[in-house]
Image 1 (tube, rainbow, N blue to C red):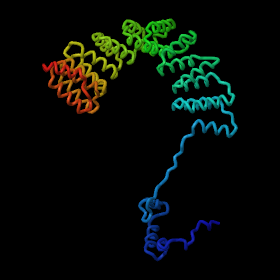
Image 2 (image 1 turned 30 degrees about the vertical axis):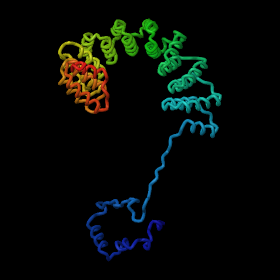
Image 3 (image 1 turned 180 degrees about the vertical axis):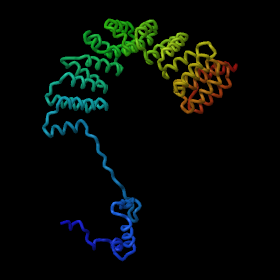
Image 4 (image 1 turned 45 degrees about the horizontal axis):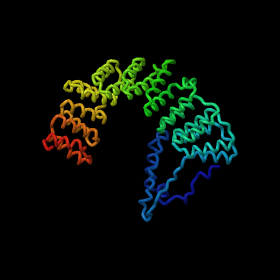
Length: 410
């Protein structure tokens, strides 16, 4: 019954025939080992077989191995497959394909999906229309996005947010503001602040401070100004226009203030030259236990370099940066060089400058050079200029004039 399982003796190789012969030495050793070990104790061992490398086989030269790569299916492939099977494409498949085009920033494939939808005769639902609108806006095709927007019979808050944010993101803030003025007020309250954030950015880009204040008034009524996300945007808006009172008003209204909000306030006060207030905000932020980041440290160090306390507060901020593990950040390092240089602690400034190493940018070089020249170390400044040239940077003409004047070569 199982004869097919028994191999033919003639098929065995001569080596295996020698092993199988009862008179051979390996056969006797095998019998002795079989008698010594019971069947339950015997174990099977895997033969040590090695697959030879084709490139090392004698007489086999220039052997190359080929690998087949499987390319992922595109949106066109999916649609062609559905058409060949004569299957209608459901709305959720269209939405998924548009999402893929949005993520990969492929407007051409997205327009192909759009054309396929039109040919299929499928009536646009609001979610699919918003997905199509987002695809065009994210890919920078604002004319196509506006056409889809204008043809929408019903628009949700997402529709308005997408179109306005698309204009702002693609540097067309005036069109964003014109569209915002046309937006129904009922829709704006349902936008969860996303419209407001985009409009505030557009107001700053166009310099329209008055409209930004009106937008703030709109969110004050429903109480959105206490929202952390909106509060951070409003603080950033007011500080960029130099209106610290408005920024402070929003800041005090927000209940739970995070790192972004505190940093926006500190950077705003530092930008306006209110360095003592920066120091107070930094200390208050520490008392409230809010974690600081490299942007917070950079603004605080910039203020410390302009406070006349012989670098005392700057050293404390430096120690705080070391404790948080952000001392080696390039923003922090350049601010440390600037702070120590302005405080006259040139040895510490040079040490921070050397720690940057090959990552030094023009800001680091200028900060170190400023420290030398402001404190009258013109010889060190000249040496640093030669180092700048060796590093491939050209010192500014103003530095050269200042060195000549300082050395009496006017």
